[in-house]
Image (cartoon, rainbow, N blue to C red; front, side, top):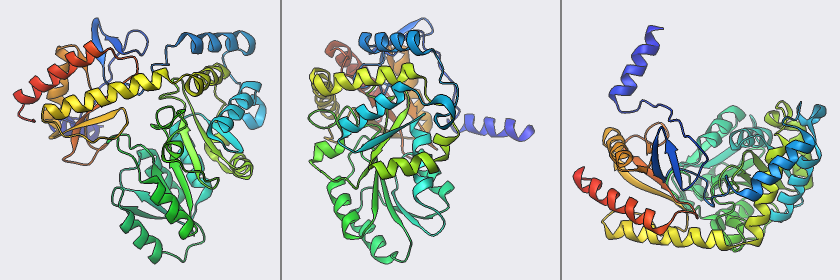
Length: 388
């Protein structure tokens, strides 16, 4: 066990050692860690739905009717009414023929990618795609090409060159989880058709956020293409837990028979499904939360730029402040915590070496006065640490 101790010591020396913080209470715009109340700028609960009364009541009603567990995988005895209702609701929401629910975004990516590609196939992946996508590609045993972030010209050159494989798959996040920028989806859809590739998109940080009714990046860009496979999570803007894949009925039938994380996992508790259905109703029929989030995003991004911090104009709630140095990043996070602002520092291996950052995430339920307070502290500490 000596090597474990040495590796832990090395992680601590490099500013890469991680610990868990205990949150007392629900995920809200303000949270309590220990006995300290903090403005929460580290949650993916973008629309503030994780503690929403309608979702909680729906989940409680489902527990009373169906119990707390599903008992088995869905192919054994765990396929329950609310799983089917949620999948029908997701397919309607995403305008696809069918949907399939998974237990997490990680397991969905593992299940779909390893089912669609294998030894004689090739996958083209954006360099900044989520770790679950990278792990899934490695497990698939397909050939693997990483193109520079959002570099359409480089991707097309790879597609022209690598044209001898049985199946070809382009995979991308639509909103990149550490940078908060958008994939060039119209161009990717064009290349997928031009070169006869499947296009698989991870909508984890886009669903509920982008588009007129929150359907995601396809709605935002005005793309209607039944061939695009859409995956996303239920754990971010939707506010509960789990994931989904939306596409053709044939695709869903294929995944039911081929996707190992689906086949060999006990089904999601139906209370989660009930909460997700309630959230989708809110997202699709009530745009006020999305409007409030959009206003917070514009305000916060503009304020950061006025202080000298660089950030993009992307309409997403993920805002990175690039610090570069891991130790300085964690010191920034620590000082903010002492002032009542909770922002996590992100270090390697989550991001490449030399790109450590504060990852700020905004919620629809953040009050402007709290955002102003947080911005003031970010600006002052940034000057103290000479990062702005």
